[in-house]
Length: 173
Image (tube, rainbow, N blue to C red; front, side):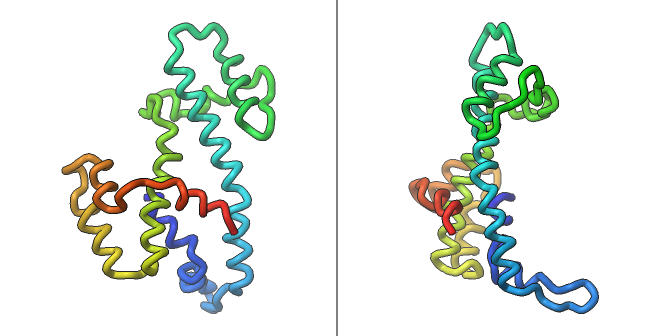
């Protein structure tokens, strides 16, 4: 589903959908560009949040004897988040992904999913985001296969080797 968000982040696609509900007047393209640029401003913060929660998740599951969970949380978040957490305030207990969310040491998968969808999206950017051949390739190698084969196999069939470069492009203006 993260891949599909990429189309809405495209300036032309967003413009085509931007009609005012009464007048159908389109948004100004400079406003759309500002909106999309503002998304990028917060991406680094979002990834720091995801990575710090991922590290905390792994540390919680790898340790057999944690004496002070609040201290562990504070130290991890202090090290990996740009804004130091408050002492004696645990946000972890309200974070359902850790407790009852079914992720069990899998929260990092959000970040890896972004790496994968960036690789797929890079094919669309290279060939045109509305390119039928690229879309049909994605359809036949991923959507039609579904759960019949491992996701790693489907990605390899679709893009070959996964690269970090398409993901890093997300942070450039």
